[in-house]
Amino acid sequence: MSHPGESILSAREAERDELRRQISTTVDAIMASYDDDGAFSGIDPYELRERIQALDILPEKGIGFDRTLETVSREVLPHMLRTWSVDYMPHLHAPSLLESISSELVIGTYNDSMDSWDQSPAATEVELAVIRCLCTLFGFGENADGCFTSGGSQSNLSGIIASRDAWCRRTLGHDVRRYGNPDVFRRMRLYTSEISHFSMDKSCHLLGLGHEAVVKLPVDDRCCIDIARAEERIARDVEAGLLPFCIVATIGTTDFGSVDDIASLRRIADRYGAYLHADAAYGSGAVMSSRYRDRIGDLSLADSLTVDFHKMFLLPISCSAILVKDASLLECFELHADYLNRVEDEEDGYVNLVDKSIQTTRRADALKVLFSFMTQGRDGYARIMDTVIGNAEYLYSRLCADADFVCPVEPTLSSVVFALREPDDVNRAVRRALLAQGTVIGQTVKDNRVMLKATLLNPALTHGHIDALIGRIKACRDALKP
Ligand SMILES: *Cc1c(COP(=O)(O)O)cnc(C)c1O
Image (tube, rainbow, N blue to C red; front, side, top):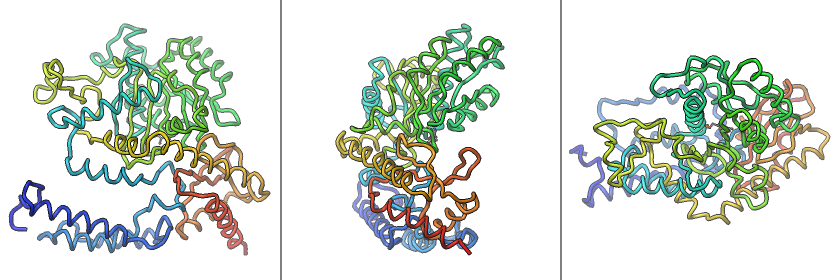
């Protein structure tokens, strides 16, 4: 290319043709990069590192798109993780719905930014409409609002900041945005399950409250907060002068998919004037299920709600939202800059979403939700959720019926934690052996025992695949025996 302008899309046919050509050859390269159904090539990490480090990433003279794609096709694509594989189930890490991959192309091509209306006119209106749709879906009502974020961690952080600020204003008459944490900050407490996501600890650190502010409540044998013990603990803490400002219900724990009893936690929060945040990063997808919807409880009881779309909803990373039942909760993020979100804009109908967000420049992720919600509809998403949760039930029933396995917690969502009735070392070695064969399952710990984990987010998985997986696990175990 002779002129740098030729690298940018324009109304001229030349650049449009070039973009069409690049996208089409990229799609071909992706399709050609794998020829089996495995999740991973199985390459050794040292070899992969050496090959990638050998690439001349910033050459003196650019090699052009075709040679770059050729290099990437040879050295990178074959060893990318293939999330669409039915052999991939270690994490809450999902394959992307086809239409959502196309929507990423729209987002990247236009590259709108969600901070101000003049950077994203249609995308701002799409986000507003999608947020409205989500507020209705989760029963949050007319006064609710929300904002897209980079993921569940940022959604949780946003919800916890909003709770802290609102609690300080309401309870202490203290303005945190202006003056920082109140003098009593060392006594403020956030209550959450001992198996909740570590973004609770990270958030309290970032808020200047520290990890000590996070009280981990014990769980029962279903891996849900033990409500009686939670009540006891909080009552004791309050007696001792501690200040509960927020309770977090986990709606789908990362490992077990277990769901805290949100109605009971609402009652406790009300007793002490605390806010209730629901971390439904995982479990929110079940709202679309026709068969299992009740399993996540009534999420409209929360003051704020984390929803991840890059988990059960099967959208490309990253895509998440924070919803708040009272729109004023998000006002804590509002600041004005002369160059960006002038106060007068709002009066003339120009909504600047930066007012509700921790981020400034932000991707138009709500478009992915629009694409997939419209493409799939309620019925398509119901089939997806019913399939993945049903698969977890099937795997659990097979493992319970098999004397070679233990399976300590009945699944609520789409995750099953289990182990071979063998020493920890054998379970660890089985996972590694499967990885080298391109089958990727998870590993965690329960009651000090190493456990294996299947996170079944892929609706392409069938009972036949599940039977085959059990067979492969046993074969790996047998191959380890001397
Ligand atoms: C995944 C997860 C998170 C974090 O979400 P990210 O999108 O990874 O930032 C938070 N809470 C729970 C329960 C999760 O499963």
